[in-house]
Image (spheres, rainbow, N blue to C red):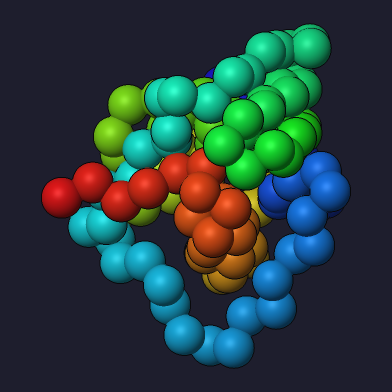
Length: 117
């Protein structure tokens, strides 16, 4: 499989991207999983919308962000997620690590994913 090119690694609709301050929120062994209780629907092969009834918020995920969401249907380590994305998309390791950390931190802040012990 040829990696798909990607201009921007992650897009979470209606949410600003975090600026990284150099601190890493997640380690390679951190296990993450998406919230199973969110109402979610695929609009297309590249777009998912979600509604968090408790927070009264709507979220949209596109492209790589949707792939991440789909991949986290089962608990995965950060290392597994990075390996999957690195094999799927044409992105250098530094960009992948930096943007993935920011994206996952935002998803965790928005209570869309959580850490599993």
